Length: 167
Image (cartoon, rainbow, N blue to C red):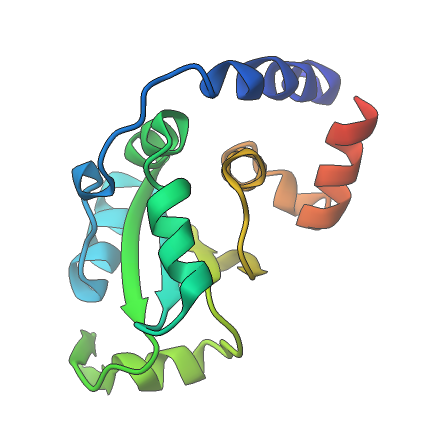
């Protein structure tokens, strides 16, 4: 599909999303780190990691106003294995033969602010990173940026600018 067709589709679909009723964020199937890595690899899906802290108000807003959005839930279910990672947790996670706490993982992944969204492909290569809050419209753009593999050509900010210009 040509880029202009995809951008046109994204611009057409996103405004329609706001007319849907909202679901509970609990209806998303959040995975633990260990199972998320395996599930993404096995299913050939992207792994979306939401790095958060318990005190982060923007993280809570992401949960309450973005993850409840029907199109966000639909895109996540179809193309992603969603994982939550508490950047201050001492809970241990296993990666192969190695064990790290969630806090250590956040440091290894160079997370410096919250929320941070990390997206890995099914081979566990980082393909997208966004630090900060995104509203539902921009979060959907991020998901489309990843699923359309636009990360091979543009940064997310360049992709967003192109969508705004209709290119």
